[in-house]
Image (cartoon, protein in one colour):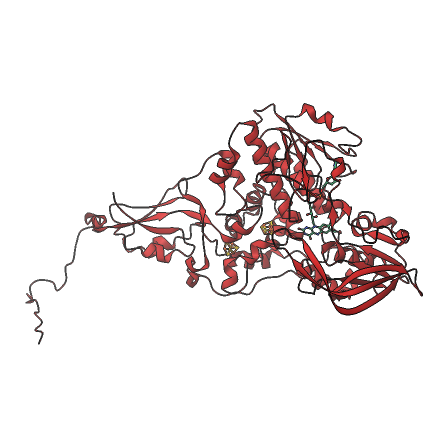
Length: 587
Ligand SMILES: Cc1cc2nc3c(=O)[nH]c(=O)nc-3n(C[C@H](O)[C@H](O)[C@H](O)COP(=O)(O)OP(=O)(O)OC[C@H]3O[C@@H](n4cnc5c(N)ncnc54)[C@H](O)[C@@H]3O)c2cc1C
Ligand code: SF4
Ligand code: SF4
């Protein structure tokens, strides 16, 4: 039996100890075996973005109404937020922690919103020029614009050479304006030009200008893209009936395919094929009966961006999946007849290459007036400078964009496996880092490792420019969903943009997807957990039983009061965004 001993109470003395003096006299910090450490980390959206944009920091600034500041965060890594905010395949969203709670945050729409509503003078992001080194950038698509932008910011002298009469590459001569209005592209290019880059239009290096003219530059960045549409049945005598998707899109005004009474067959399942079909629909004033798209992929395998495919289907696009073209001949009713075999497709996820295999005996034939082939683009290897090695249709580069010729670097579609805008911008950014290291005799591998975000292929350009990491930052640690305290985030549905009515958009090139209204955007901004980014919410202060959280008045950085913090860890649990970790206190 247990006998409990009770203290004898003295009625003249209080039942509990009461201090009539300040608790500051009790230096409870002596009890501590662990201490809180405040460190900003990497959000998974940033880790997944090929360009490595600091998305939670931008959401934080925007939540305080500072849209210019938020746009500036984007511009630290990405010169084209208005473009990416419209056409990026947004891998950031598929890794967003909020996706495990209700719906991923609409990061792409947020990027577009900032680009449309924010204002930044990019010359404030420039480092004063201290270098006489010069770089020739060949090709002005997203890869070339990105390389030129980041190199110019670092103070190098840049000349940008472009074959066409205007800058932008496939952003101008490929992606249709109903997805990317030219006013948006022009605005971003004007901002880029504020950096003082010298531009030479209508200049094809290797043709109108010999490669030897670039000998005066200290380095060259090749971003020439893939411009030759792959052909089908090249030796058939019916070539006047066949166009490539990229040729058609680059000059739709003079297309001979305007007649809605004619039948046009489009071959391919990617963005180019879908854009060809939707463009043709528009130049035929919404009459889509004569337009048929056939591809070997199943609907789920089609490489076209899912949102674009949905919009195309809403517009009535006629898609036939699982058929590979095998024969072209003259038709009985129409000038051409294309024979198809039932097919299935295997995609190599590393290289993006597909293998099409005919399956079964089923055959089909379509007769048409014309065929537009959109089955991928090729490199014009013949025009590249000597000693630049090419393999499997791409310029050979090492992990940091260096080609086989000294002083020549490359990026974007011409050198990459992925043909997307964000990856091209990332290639330009990495090329800029590699060229800067080349000039400064630094090991690019070491520099990349220092500023790499987690284990991703991206890095923080701002940190690289400043060659400095803050003590309160860890670029290697990525915050997972289980590290977020969701108690502080009420569920709320994702805000999505509205779209133009199908009937209106089928007949015009006006933008299909509308921007999100500021009032609705503020709801979406509030949905972001700001994973790994301290937003000064003060939860740690509120929950600390010892009032031991201190804030540096100037920097806003938090620390703890060593005299009083008992190391209980309440702040670490209360932090919604995983900034505070408890560490053994050996001091
Ligand atoms: C129709 C279409 C739709 C697309 N839709 C999307 C989409 O929705 N989302 C997405 O992420 N991606 C999309 N893409 C892919 C995207 O556009 C490309 O991945 C991206 O543009 C590649 O950028 P780049 O800078 O490597 O090359 P490009 O954009 O191709 O630019 C290369 C530039 O180099 C110039 N050039 C070439 N050779 C020379 C030379 N010798 N001298 C001077 N200049 C030269 C060319 O004229 C061109 O301007 C689409 C592509 C097409 C064609
Ligand atoms: S560039 Fe693409 S991946 Fe990066 S934040 Fe924007 S939408 Fe997301
Ligand atoms: S909640 Fe915000 S910070 Fe976290 S992954 Fe999503 S967008 Fe990024």
